[in-house]
Amino acid sequence: MSRDGQRAEQIKQLCADLEAAKELSADVLLRQIQEIGFQCQRCGECCTGDDNSVVVFPFEVRRILAAAGLQWLEAVEPPKEGEWDRNGCFHTLEWRLKKEGASCKFYSKTACGMNGFVVCRIYESRPLICSTYPFYLDRGVLHFSECRGLGGMIEPDKAKELAKLLILRYVTEIREAVALLEKYEDFERGGPEEDGRCIVHDSEGAHSIFR
Image 1 (tube, rainbow, N blue to C red):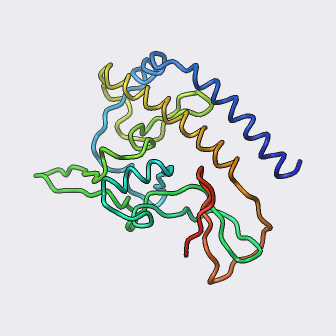
Image 2: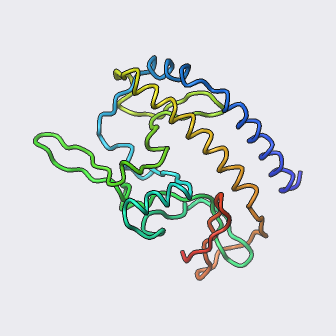
């Protein structure tokens, strides 16, 4: 099957997933979340680590920029995974929150007696992936990542809010993926060049930046 054919099949499957997502019940998710249990420990482990990578969509980036008073590339960066075109440009998908060392740029830890507490400088404008961690939906099924807060007591109102956010995140991820695929323009593959540019493909199109 051609690349265009594969893309058409991907869009078709995503659209089917989107229709199914609209039928998800927040009440069912609420009960599942309560059965698993969760209480944030404010440890900051989800904000740090070499493998930490927070995907952000264009509308989320703008919300962060407005809250933090930053320019686009001061807040986000392209991922390192991608392919080169015949002109030596590097192509990749979506944006990630910028990191400083092994930590999210917006993470800080402030000493407080014997313990510390985590401070997120964009907490009120944080991406959906952060506000729903450690839970996520895959093909409508609830999953969770490793987190020391799992198993903790969670109040029904907090569980319901989390369930609604999970559905919103899932629907948003599907819509963003469809928009990305619809706007994506394929390219001839090649090798890297030192002065090649980086092309980031997202739901709004292709964006060329210096690496």
